[in-house]
Length: 247
Image (cartoon, rainbow, N blue to C red; front, top):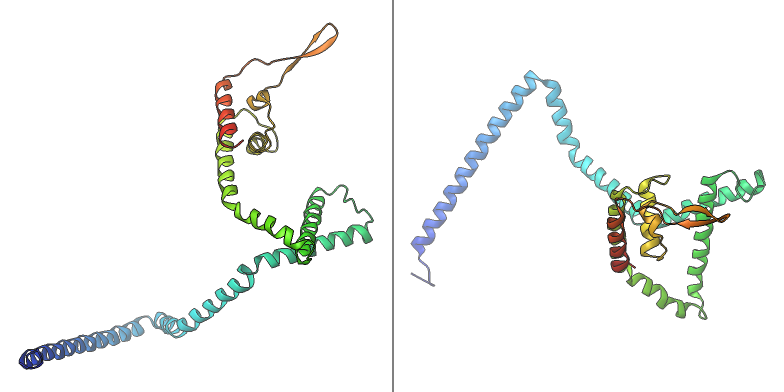
């Protein structure tokens, strides 16, 4: 025994390691021999399949490199610059529509083109917001507007909670099936809950899907409350929940 270990024990462990390595080499050699034999049989029986496998093995590293490069290009060009591409696309569409309506048709108001008017309105609004963003570089305006923009960024969590609350109540009101206004009952339900929860603009009869009845009394029309429906209690319970949790 020397330096805290036995020379005999060390020799035994070394011999076991060498024996394990030798067995591993034998198994690897046997597997390689069997693989060559199987490949030869496959080549004799199905040369087309063997050729396809050889091509796949040969081109697999290059395919992985090419796919990685394409994904990186998409990530850099598209994903990381999505906002810039959106801005460029919106500006291009807006300028094209402005040129067409001004110099070709002469109708700047975009009459009889609802889609064009909507896109043009979004572009005009976007240009005003860009002008506001450019004013941040002015010393007389920038320092006072930066805290406002920072406060808007910090209310993102509040907005997320508000949106989920509105979606929950909108879905519940949609299930009531008390309004089927066009273009879709879901849109009608969403605007009803938005008016009630955010703008506190509501009409209990309208929420219930009814309207006051105008009855003539002494040659004048006077509104009369409609007959309550089966959803009277449910609608008012939802009204209370929206007013309490959102409004």
